[in-house]
Image: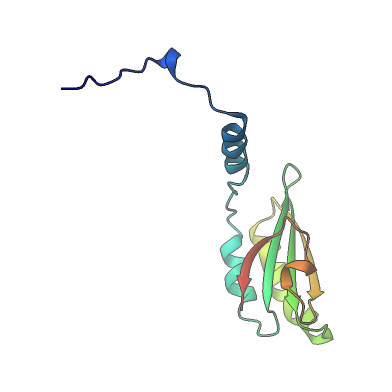
Length: 123
């Protein structure tokens, strides 16, 4: 019968630089889920002109950028967004919201927003 090797804690090999980097990157990529995400997702998805919504939160300042992506700019969209925007600001006064409308004009939607913005909703 073969003996099982017993590894003492001091005998374990230390993680390589690559293993530490991967673990750190995985930890950094864990995203906080905010309470206003679902209200944004459900209210903005009712507006047919909006193709996607992205969110970018400035950590530490609690400034929230909400990007509504549309195929082309339409002036009537701004009036339709006023009500859900004001309602959201009233429900979450501890956050400062900045609302943006961006036209993707048929291009990849993720190119119309900052690279670190998170997708909340897409058609």
